[in-house]
Image (cartoon, rainbow, N blue to C red):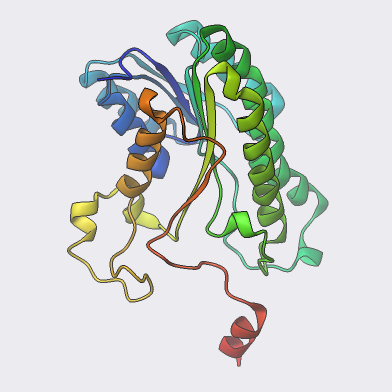
Length: 263
């Protein structure tokens, strides 16, 4: 249990991919702060489940798009569980509705940028002194498939811009903090939706997914096990990387393909 006793903050972890990551790291013996915005009931239930594994845990409400919430999330985690050793920036607003950039409101643009880029940077900035003092830390960012290629993504202009900006920030921060024993990596989940976010790989192998080249749907376990690996002390040589966890699926379809489908 190489991570036993480490304090982990996972944003947006009451459900979905964040929840699976919380369970995985708790099984390693980590203390886990579960962050949520509206899912208070689910967060409380997860905290109970984590504590049943023999680790300390707490639920912390807050929106990563709001600076005052970010400060409070870090302060409450530090007060209850101690300095943060591992930060998993899982939370990030995303609008499922397909819209061109011109159809977004200014407030929506700002919210998406803050939730997916500026808020992440501010969270990192708050925890870095804790990690530097210990000369050890793990920071995980979340992107989307092919984010490292900085391709255009029709109907997702703002979200894509924020995440692509985060790609550059991930690489820069990794270089700057390497001498302090801190690694910074980005994982880019494929199109993992609904119940699959909290399913295991074993469950997914019982199904066929014709869109994914590997032939099965992706799961929360697929994502959590990569994060788990990156957090291990022995993974200290892996930093500044952008990793697709997609089963080979390319989520970005060019505009001509979208237009053909409309016709």
